[in-house]
Image (tube, rainbow, N blue to C red):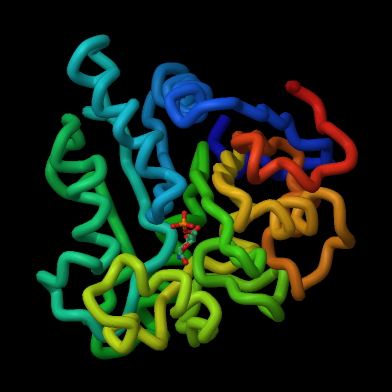
Length: 260
Ligand code: GLP
């Protein structure tokens, strides 16, 4: 059964929530989920996020690859989003970030990691192409969450059924992401992002949240109303979600979900 087939008859279920005390535990619990997907699917399709929250997970996957023979040779991977307007070789372009964080250190076969082509002359056509590529199914989508509740670059107000498209990055998110750039003005104003609807098509979602700055967003995502104003609240519509959060990020949750 493909990922999209297994996802067709989904009914929402409460996310499995793992609250962890330390960064290495967070990386290990999240890596178990990824390894479970990679090890059990014949041709695993993995959705990759970038950002500070997922760096520890990728470090742990690299360790398991080197020390425990975890192989990515049969895995196809798909970037969740990409900045527009950065030169191809820019170190902060997500395609280059993911190389440094993961791809260069494990055994993906050449061409196995795909992303939206930010240099395409017809961006609308590129968004459609990428969305069609993903329509074949993603087994596991890794996600971070923004302080304003965004997922990928789906900012507050994004339609819950949105598909891959060009978006404006909010000033709040530009400020948050400025820490990765030499100067705040360097942060691009636009991106290509998988839509919320695109993300929800994955068979399983893995959300990672760290730090107190994410606490309000995580509560709104998991316990607030499902609404475009909090894009991550769309996770409540999915039947199979794992959330791995540290204590600071989970501090505002009222109702512990399953898995804790
Ligand atoms: C960016 C990315 C998102 C990511 C978010 C949180 O805006 N587009 O995919 O989830 O930042 O990033 P961080 O983990 O660095 O807080």
